[in-house]
Length: 100
Image 1 (spheres, helix red, strand yellow):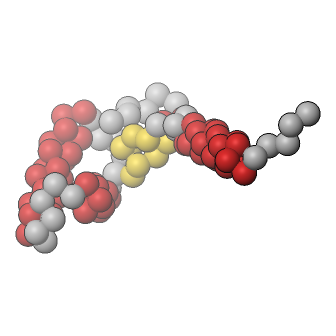
Image 2: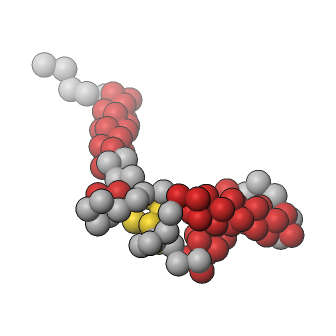
């Protein structure tokens, strides 16, 4: 039986690392997050979301971070939170709740 060389050990370790990374990321893919606020209808949600998207884009522009998804996403969560929405896992919604 031939012993593995350092090059083949490196390849095996790289393959194991890639496999472990893929498995850990697949666990994150199972949860889907939605916006939720009790008592809100789809029309109100759509209006609130569009206003927050516009505000978030303008906020990023004023910071000279136009198009920066991290800045826009953080501001979007803050804006929606101020309007009473929470991002929750879809499976955690109350039975019969509207998901947005």
